[in-house]
Length: 102
Image (spheres, one colour):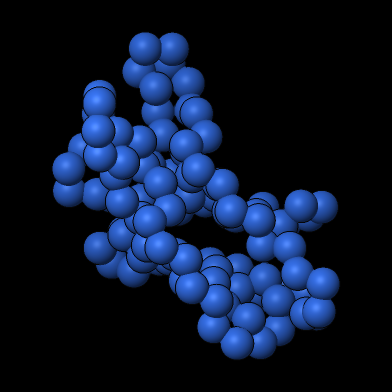
């Protein structure tokens, strides 16, 4: 499942949630120089103590496209906020904060 990440200070990114076998969140951005998507950040959602959810929508993103809630396990929600790296060049979209809610 994938969602658009929109930040005010540059191009948008793409959030992908993988389910099996490695549950994770991937952040992509289009690299115009090579005309392809590149992974700019990842976060593993593996846990050893929760039961995986079946047949549900694993992610929702707020209307501003800068915050996402991901739930792949019963009783556990991951909240992600996104930002653009500062420094040289345009800066890549990345996960700026991550919270686990149990």
